[in-house]
Image 1 (cartoon, rainbow, N blue to C red):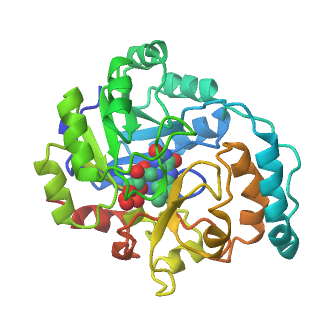
Image 2: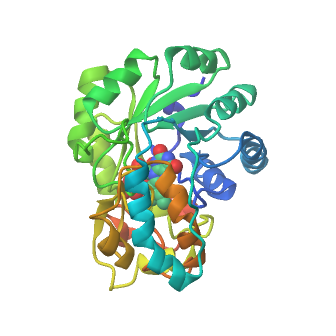
Length: 336
Ligand SMILES: Cc1cc2nc3c(=O)[nH]c(=O)nc-3n(C[C@H](O)[C@H](O)[C@H](O)COP(=O)(O)O)c2cc1C
């Protein structure tokens, strides 16, 4: 089974679902001595199987695949409809057709877990919750190391009790979705360093520290606190191997975008991104209705894909450090 001791560089390349993760980026981080992850949320099981084959054609090093754990909560139709009404003028301006009904989906979770087992991937990581002990046991039988992303000690203890081999401690400054287990949960808002320390103390498991990592000094501080690796997402967004949209790449260096916040405006789940007009207008009224709001805003994000005031500009607080250089250079620059 994979072990973090095997890594040449104590760096994990974050899974970034929805188009940013590419097999090329995952393989580039692994080939540079780190552990490249691929964010497989929103893919079908068949697409995941094909993606794993492409990653394996690009690297013979260990890599990880990340899935979102589904949670079905009662659908708040009134809140969904009200938000749809609020988005309608923007959809009209962009010529985007908003769906009237969005059925719940579990994102083919069981089918994708089966693919991870069949393919015996080196590492499986989970976000938005942790799988059952039985699912973990099936992954273990296939030789898969199972990691869980957590935002507080309580979540870490749940993952440990269900058989996690390792944890990713995601601090509040991290870009993209908050990994909180419950859709309705408040963000515990713990910084990466104290979260890492607390999770190690509580569980004794290997911990990968994520959130706001912007320099080799940051990596050194997290390793000194006991982390086995630092995970970077935002620092990879401008790499040529990433699937990041051009408007997103540009916004990361545009002086007009100065800060990040967490918002439910795009998906219904909290996520951190650069403040733009969409976030300004809709954060206050966005309902915690996931994954339906994600589907609802999809046509708007597609129609406005070149407009940084429309699309989600996921980014962590260290976004100004992201360089437009190959991923191998980013990993090399972070070696402690
Ligand atoms: C564009 C983007 C997409 C992300 N998608 C995922 C994902 O699919 N799964 C996941 O566990 N984390 C995801 N994250 C969060 C990262 O795993 C990680 O916690 C975060 O990037 C670390 O903080 P940093 O962005 O400051 O480096 C995403 C982050 C970004 C920036």
